[in-house]
Amino acid sequence: MIKIQSKSKIHGKMVVGAGSGVPPTIVGKYFYAETHDYDKNKWWTLESWYGNSSHTQHATVLPGSSTDVIVLGSVEPTVDLDRQDWVQPHTINSGSAGIVFTSTLSGNVSCDITGSATFNGNATYNK
Figure 1 (tube, rainbow, N blue to C red):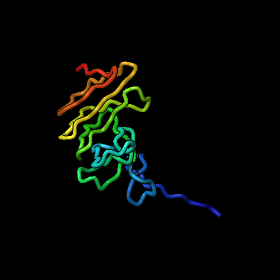
Figure 2 (figure 1 turned 135 degrees about the vertical axis):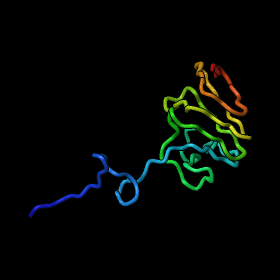
Figure 3 (figure 1 turned 30 degrees about the vertical axis):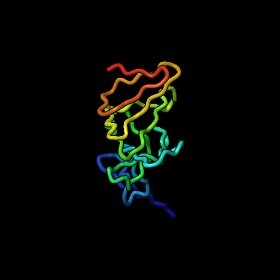
């Protein structure tokens, strides 16, 4: 007996998403928090990231270096610049909530930031 496996391909690449059996990668672009919850207000908490501005499509990965991040909601995210999983996005729009950066080692942010940003400890901004 011969077993044939079928793979959908477009230009030699596997199709990811609907019908392929592989869930799509949804990059976190929108950070959304409405309550001061210690875990949900952290940048690295995937639960607070969404792929759409209406915050109905949960992200499957944190923002990358080419992501233009937008902060929604009324609670600012806290970013620990000393964490190994911190990846500086392309830009950050902190909206009306703002954003807080912390560092004990002298972490630096150099991307464009629109809106308010607070730098605690040894965190610096050097554009």
